[in-house]
Image 1 (spheres, rainbow over the protein chains, first blue to last red):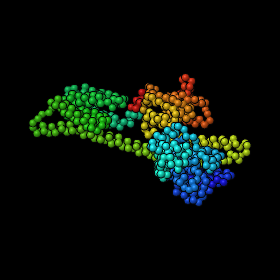
Image 2: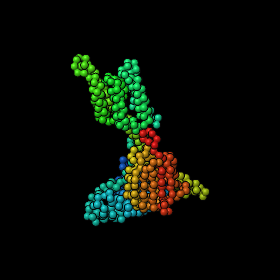
Image 3: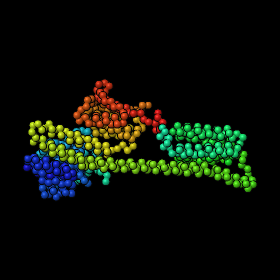
Image 4: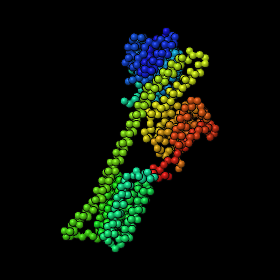
Length: 191
Length: 383
């Protein structure tokens, strides 16, 4: 049984997802958070295996939350589920530690497969090609490029820290900064 | 043309004042017999009034031409001189020559024009040899002359100030309208994205979960509904992008170069943008840009092109935009889901442009050619 929670600020999406997940044997939706503020409570109450995370959330974004989720122990698998899941998001998602990325227009069976895959500990991410890497590299500090390279190859953070002789906390901070730098800005409404 | 002339409030002022000035001059000439050649002078004044009003009314270029204003002024001061006295029946008539320069020139230049007029008038007064220099009555006459020279300066300043004020008011109104429209577009975009599109995604998801449970015959229907929902989502995405990024009055050439640079950074194709387009009306500019942007996107994403050339040009018939790529080519017939092509054709039709999409000249790639409609002359006269 795979335990799943959702983070999405759209009521229609939360209701739809809950209904769809309920229909699938082997997957159980334990709760839904509508914002980053609701998330810790839902997380503590449910201890999920997989968090289905919207990219655009009020006041923050999926990548920032993903970083936070990955610091909790035990860290759940994170599947970024977004209407913006395009190529420009792959590298930032990898850096943020997301296990998978899926577009909201994907049909339900694809969603179920993705949830099962990330719950097993595998990744559901498009392969990173040279252009994506170059585009990301151009945005980053040259000193951070080794971190980018190792993260993309799947090297665990502890090993990256050891290789670069960095303090794990410092590495974590640098990755946070890289994620912020690469974050894809989704235009917010003007009030 | 007539509409443009009617909309020109300063030309209306010129017409009214000049007709009045001419009527006063002719009446005074014929009633008081000022000179020996009153009748020819009255005829000349009437003819000149008619000629200038018709010429200025016909041609926006003349209405904006300092040379024409200068000729007009010299002619009017010539009439003053011909009447033999600077206290001339043609004084009011001569003042009307100030209307166009005062309202068209920047305020400082208008002031200079006014002062120059006054000085020239002073010279004309000297030439009429009616400026004596002793006695009390002469002092009074000198004061009258000073007033005569001062009035044109005041008129020029006042007209210049009013026209500047009106111009600023119009700009402020346009700016506030533009901001209101922009705010409204943002709101619609957000609602479309935040509410409608999320519901479409949710409906698509729920329906797709149902697909496994329907009877054999139902699959086709579910698939068709799913395809419709996907298309609706894509439509909304396009609309949201459009609402969020209006052209804001920037020229299409600049925007296209920016877009090309963006695509170059993201993709594998090199995009070369050459030439420039004539200046376009906001509506034509918006649609032209979207058509070109869509064609570029197609060339990069779907046709897998590696070299794209955008040629912009201007010709007497309007503007022309040609996009050549070396990709796999575009489907020519109406394709299901060919939303991009359909919207390009729709846009071209909206602005009265001719859109041609065909294989490239050497049989490879695709050529998208857009011939823009002729541009109406800015000055109101049709080219």
